[in-house]
Each structure stands twice: as structure tokens, then as C-alpha cells.
Length: 573
Image 1 (cartoon, helix red, strand yellow):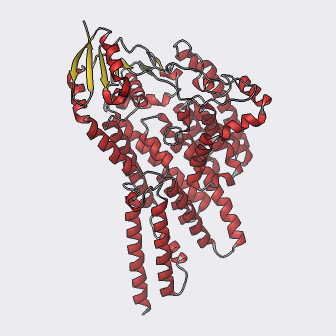
Image 2 (cartoon, helix red, strand yellow):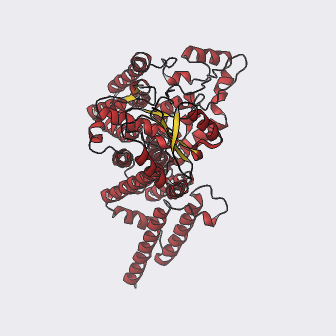
Image 3 (tube, one colour):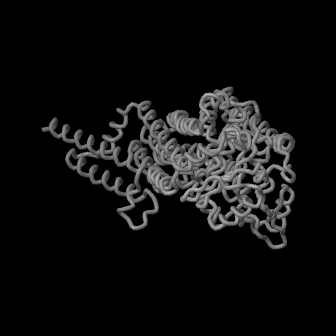
């Protein structure tokens, strides 16, 4: 009888596991919107999973006359960790690659992709870091990203943005390897380790960042997790090397390095290394933004580093300090308006706000997040949780949340001795609950949306027309959404005028910065000097007739027009 019951229990657990696996995989393709009128997130299917597990546990427990949690923990112990990790990396890589590729193929990409594609292509052909989109200048003045040089040789062999998509997918997904090492060292128990990996896998910030063009920021999660792992295992040289590589990815990675340094000092991991990292990060940031980057960036009026121009009460620290002294309460209040509270919620929520339980790591996530919040008054896009900025903040928050889990696990184990397995399973469910709740629309939903958008706009016809009518070496001015398909050339300009989205605050007796930009100073104004101009009715909207009128009045003739709205002009000889 006992053997029969054991086989029945094993079969039940097997089918439950298989069903759970299928359901988890399906969440990448649907959010089960047909079950609710207005599903806000994956929270509803997560409730279904929780309820199913509860009733299944109750059924098995009733048959076996004991608790099911030890059985779940025992089954988790049988899983090959590295195989599970490899499967997670493969799934996340595939999802990110499909997201970015379908977005690109549907002509939904922004000009950031065109900028990086052209910079790497130019660097591969000896014109290092040159970008015509930013005004025929050296892009190191806009963002200091020497790591792009490592990709340039490969672009001689694979000159295609899909190569960049593959690189960023592998970079973001392989970050789970050091994340696993950190989790295993600090948490030890498998349910908690797997739940942390699931949080990263389901992270809206990570998947959204991977979808949002290509940026060298996507190397940061991998490097940050390794740097932190080397710190907590006393491998100081490894940590320093990882920090140096982080600084080569982007200038504001200095704040992640500074956060690591402060953690090393306060947590007493290695105070000497902590002081070195902190001092080096501050020195690097000041020298780079004040003296080095302005040398490369030459457009008039753009000599100052852009983050300074976006500060809420003036382009200098002194201006903003003056605002703080005149109205301290009002100054603090502007950082807790509805927009920024929403940002904090989406930043900390997916990990169940556990990061707040680890004060030693506050600097690690508050410094990069604080820089984005400060700059968001002049550029609201910095608060977009699904942009490249999440590559700075999400891994830092996750490291802090892991340590928050350690703290909570210790407290609960002291309060309820003898229930360590149950505590770890409950905390794992807690993490998964919040990860699912903040996931939002699934990646499968977005992929299907991009496929429909490409079909509606006639993406194949646009691609064929561009190949037929625009020579490879010709200079081109393009509408933003098409620019990434024409960026592997020496001269590419944008057709639209760019404006910065701002949200400047107001304080009594304090003058707001309110920097007015008729056009983004990072973009070239040479749009009517190219050999060809590409416009599209769908992307220009109501301005399309006036754009065509401007083009026609500047010695251009129309050489192609399709029913979908694509128009190609050639400059009169």
C-alpha cells in the first residue's frame, strides 16, 4: 500500500511539475487576458498557480498524512542546478533576441539603434566613434563607451544589427551565472536561489532593456554581479578588474563602482579596496565629464555634459544646492511626485521591496537611481523602467534584495526554529508573487504586436524599396523609425526635429532650470544636405504634408512612393 501511494504521489508531483513548467513558459506568450476584462499583470495567473499548488499540496498531504513542503524541498534538491541555469539562460536569450529582432523588422526601432550601429560600423572602417547623426562628431563626447571598440572587428565579418542583438541577449542572460553564484553563496537554500533567478528571468526591466535598441549598458549586469561576487569572496583583484570594465561601458557606471566601494567600506568586506574604488570612481567621473568628454563633443552650446543640463534648478551643483537651502521641504518634495513615486514602485516592487532591508547596500542602488531621477526633470525617459537605464539599477536592486532575504531568513529562523525549509519556500513564493505581479504585458504579447505592426506597415515592401533605390555609399536623411535600416554608411541624418521631454519643478522663490531645447543638441541639423531623403506618412503623422513641402522646396525630386506612405527623394544634380 505504501509503495502504491508513493507511486501515486510521485506521479502527481510529476504532472504538477510538468503543468507548472508549461504554464510558466506560456507566460512569455500570453497574459491570459481572455480570463479578465482588464488584466493589469501576471498577478492573476500567479494566483491560479498559487491556488493550484495549495490544493494539490492539501490533497497530497491528506493522503500522506504529513506536510508537503519537505517533499517539495527534496524534489528541488534533485534538480541539476547548472542544467536549470543553462535552460534559463537559453530562454532569456531567445526572448530578448526575438523582442529586439521583431521590433527592428517592424520598423519600430528608435534612433539610438541607428547611432550605435553607425558608430560601430564607422569604427570597423577606421573612423573611430564618428557619428553623423550627432553632428559628424566623436560620440565619446556624448557617452564615453570605449567598449564599443571590442565589437568593431566583428562588424567587419557580421555587419548587421542582429549581431548586436545576439551580443546583448547573451550579455543580459549570461548575467544569471554570477547572479547564481552570489545567490548560492548568500542564500544556500535552493528554493531561494531558484526564486532569485526567476525574478531576474521575469524582470520587466531586463527584458524591456533588451528590447530597447542596443546599448553598451547591457554588459553592466554581468560585470556588476561578478564584481560583487569577487568582493564577497575576497577576490579583490577580480573585483577591481570588473569595475574597470564597467567604467569602459559608460561614464555613469562610475556610480555603480562608487556604490560598490561604499558597500565594501560599510560592510567591512575590504575597506582598503572600498576606499580605492570610491575615490577612483569619483575622480573618473569628474575628470571625464568636466575635461575629457567636452574635448570630443564640438557642437556649439553642447560643451557641457548633458546630465548637468538636465538638473532641476540649474546646470550646476551650486544652483541646486541654493534651491535646497531656500526651500528644503519643497526641494525634497519634488522627488516624490506621482511620476517619481511610480518609478520607485516599479524599481523596488519586483523584488518585494526586500532591498530596503539591507542598509549596507543602499548606496549601490540609490546612487545610479538617484542620478537618473535628478536627470529626469530634463529628460523623462530616464525613468523608463524598460530602457537601457534598468541595466544599471535592476541588478543593483537585486543584489540588495538578496541581502534583504538573508536578513529576513535569519530573523524568521530565530523566531521559528526548526522550520527553515518552510521559511525558505514561503519567502520564495513571496519573491515569485511580486516578480509576476510587476511583470506586466508579456514578451510574447510584445513580439506578436511587433509582427502585426510590421505586417500593417508593409515592412517587406519598405525593405525592398530601400535596397533598390538607395545606393550603399550615398548620404541619407531618414525618418527616425527607418534610420536603423540605413545606418551602415558614413553619412546619415535624421529628418525629424527632436525635443526633450521635460518635467521641471517649481519652488517658491527658486527659479526652475526649464532649459528649452528647440531641438536635441546631440543631433545634427544637416538633414537637407544628403543625397537621398526617406519619409513615411505613418511615422510623421499630421506633419507629413509640411515635411514633404519642405523637402520639395530644397532641390529634391521624388523617385519613389508606395501606397503605404513611404516616399523617397533624390537630390537634384
